[in-house]
Image (cartoon, rainbow, N blue to C red; front, side, top):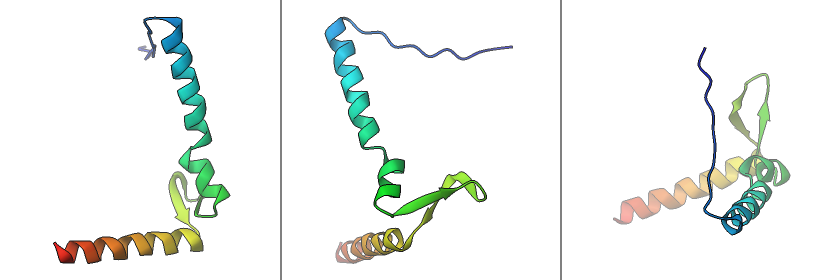
Length: 76
């Protein structure tokens, strides 16, 4: 049986410290957490955890972005 092993290497402790800080900041900005906090989307085990379900605010935001994209696309 094969097992995948992941690893990281750094030249020094300073690079490791920067990487750890960067990963902690990334956790604060995780889209799954922000989406739930802002009521943009949610996940359901019944539908599948990889499929975000848009909530009303999220649907409105997606429509605004799509409308903007369509207008810019038509201009060009």
